[in-house]
Length: 269
DNA sequence: ATGGTTGAGCGTCAA
Image (tube, rainbow, N blue to C red):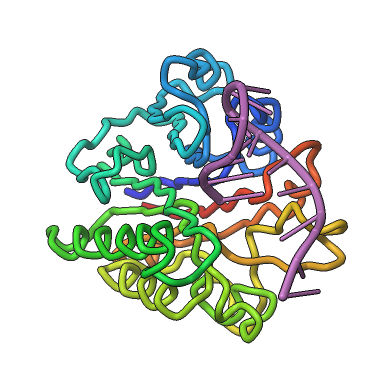
């Protein structure tokens, strides 16, 4: 027996500020599970009633003051998984993992917010860039060291656009943090620990595909200098169950919205 | 080459 599952991911860039936008996401995507990054809310200030009011009574969150923060909102019961390490021993709030209770069995879900990496793509002079590369390498090693992946979904703002057409200009961005070779090679190595890119599954690699447009453009749609920083990966056993993907580009025009747009994948498990 | 904008939360830092 299979069950249809829709999982959405969004870098919301302040949960409290953009709480009123979540009904728009829900109406458009009808996700069973919503994974959020950059919630920017400490746990003691989290709007604890909001998930249930939105129709997602099962929720977990991990936040801190000012920066970072992740949350998972679910219509399905879930169990928190606490087996992952404190990435780079920073005490950051960049990862949550849960087991979703489906009739067909549990699905393991990982929600990641990878460090952005600062401005200078040099690990020797920029500690933020070093942290980003170390984070990706540590995650790669952690998944490599576990049992073979199955029934697993990984989503999040991974802050890396791995393919040539995941950015508006491959040549012009080769030395820009998010698309440098050490980053794209690192992300590819992580993906290859048993994952499959669930969005590119539906969209040929030659086609431009973005999930983020900078605030610093007067007209984001006209300049269209986007990057694909937000991802949904599935373990290889779930590949045959992939049914659809949506990059909710219209969300970039919502009032006072995030610079990232939601990404959703529908699959049968 | 540079600057451009946004959020957290009150001076800048992070993105």
